[in-house]
Image (cartoon, rainbow, N blue to C red):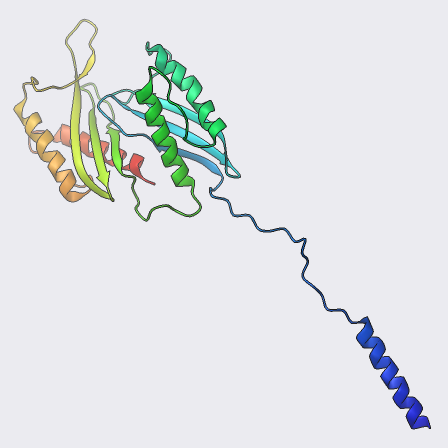
Length: 246
């Protein structure tokens, strides 16, 4: 009898333990991880460059939302266009375009009438800034395709400019320019043109451009007889490539 009672008690205890044991089910209310398209931060990017200058933007992103855009434009010798710049449509575009980018949360915006060139260049620059911000890179290349502007440090003799065209991380074309000062009572800084009398300068501009393309970068020898211009062009090409970097 005692054995039977002990067996019954053991079975009751086992059933009680089993009854109290619950299998934990995963919560159906757990938050789903979100994957943002863009990394938060402020991204600087540049539009295409010409001998008339280039545009620059700073785009700030928070949780996939463009919260601020700053736009700037520089003239052909790399000087920022400020309040003294007399073209009114430019100032209208500079004031209106940032708000359009923020409102659209992207680059699907209208250009400003009378400042189509500036507006379009800022649109391109914002596209590049957004590409820089991507969590998943859109390209394996290290440089954007396009033409990028670089300018050397200025001296009392002028400065040098490089327009560097990139395709698939390769320099495919380089245009080299340099400035000088007029002999007016109030000297003006102007680009040297075909009438500039120093033949070696013109030869150097052609040869140095070819060297940059061949080297796919600024690490080239200077041109004999135009060392100063060569050094400035090397600096300008290096800075153009910095603007092209993703």
